[in-house]
Length: 224
Figure (tube, one colour):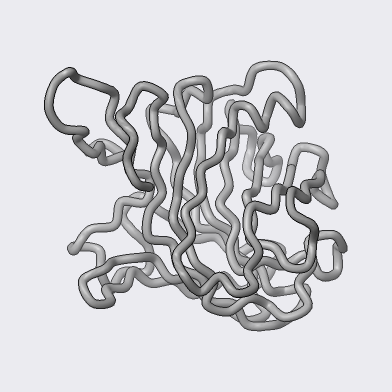
């Protein structure tokens, strides 16, 4: 069975389809994660809770936790060539960890982060270059930085968690961001995922993700 489900784009002329990376369907409601996803705790913490939810016919993945930190990940096969498109998603933060601030290591928590890891993959524990697109707090618009523990990690604040209980659509260009941060052409994306961390502030967070797509440059415009 293919790892990724492809969404048809309609009638001729044929165009590259959008790739549904989240994979939510009616058959996944009630599961902890959609098919193809895995959960891993980080830094010795308990992983956040997750569930595929149906609310009034709308399905989404809910991630919640307090004093927890964990990844929800899926391998991408075939890998996503970064020059071929952009990534788009729709999310909301129902509750953000109080006092979270991406600028300081001891407050570096987020209601949710969407990340991409660029291949080739190394042994687990030695992360490949990874970009985290994060909900933030009081940081200025456009705030970005290297990871506190590794120069192979880069964090980009794409939305404030404050007042973001409505759905928000995000579109990013990982290939362009890679080139800006590390220089040179970006390797293909081997892993996509989510991270929720509340272990620094020990506060509660609840966030939802209802879509996550790879949109090819030659695909017809569509909502994420």
